[in-house]
Image 1: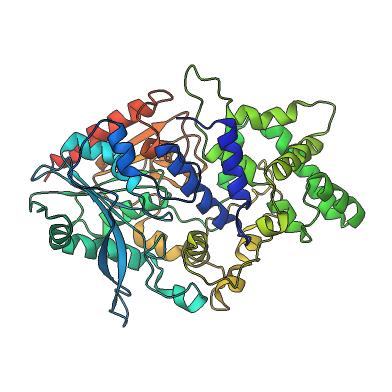
Image 2 (image 1 turned 90 degrees about the vertical axis):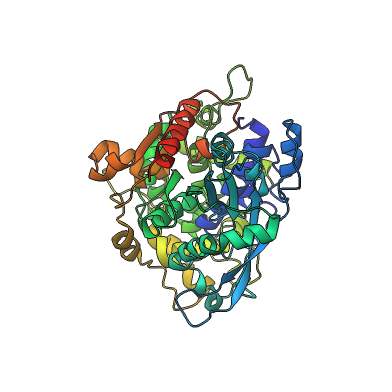
Length: 512
């Protein structure tokens, strides 16, 4: 599977705001892209609007089944495990027991910051592992995402139940009650001998690691793809990986340096001239203008996958860097031409796409990006900021963690300052040195999030806990590709990584 030029245009179009009536902060735009990208890799569906046809895909691959695995089941989950509100809400769950043999493992995938999709029941690495080990695969939707809401709207006060502690306890509470729930839902008994394996990609991988640490009596092992286990409020390291992946990084850095000098000048005539050159003249806030330039570079690297061998599809990194080969222009002009073409070709409305606090008072449900933004405001940060000198910058110095957190109060009220309590999570779960065992950590070295992961940093820093786990890296891969890339892809190291993942899981399952 690869990103064709038309597909890449669609991804950037959607992340930039086409099809939405409200703007979103950068963190919200990235959550939207993550969902559409994974859906496309699993099924080829690039609409970003409908759930994927898991049964159709499964039957197309020549398998038969007793029932539809696309049927959702609804688990009665506690609203606040640690507070006074012990009433329940309906949490969406999907189950595939087609490969299950009594005593086989149960793979649990909490879908994290994206809606639960039944497509993972018939594609992706968790399904591959279940098929190889006689396992059952269960997908549970994260609270406040998809269709699993404990509240009637997403106003600030109603977001209080969206915490890591509640999300992790959701997993534990489900496992404790899974035998009766699965029996009532599909009529299948989970053997008491079955071992539970938590799985996930990106944020959901972090949940898998932390759940394994907090509930070792319930969760026997974990598979974590691209898990950012270090919670970093000022994530300037992101750009360092992007710079290493882009051959044109020096040109981009040069363009950004000139742009910052222009913004520093406060010369409105000159600034407005360049905003028009970028087709972003409707953005009145200069920081919003600077922030609008980050999507194309970061998304190209974060979701990079080389074209399939023998394919005539263009390489997305080569496409982006091709804009900077025009030596008749200064790099800033080349960047302006690239951005203007992106905005115009995809019919992006810059105000609705890039104004950081528009849509703050839209409290309707079914806004996955809003839920993720709340989590970044309160617990994670993960603000992808401009590195400080002398480090090379691929984004404007105006793209700071302070600028990205500024809309938090507008969205969620004065009690949400935008200063997340990252120390709590790092102290509780250990950051880059988690006291955990039987976890297979996987990272692509092109992945900007790898800077916050164990698999990469355990190699660089020789972390003492790495001997109890398995670390797998892919030099040419990026974010979560081992988790959802098509099985037909056997290049760029993903086939070797998947072989190592299965060997690690089999090793863990053999342990008591």
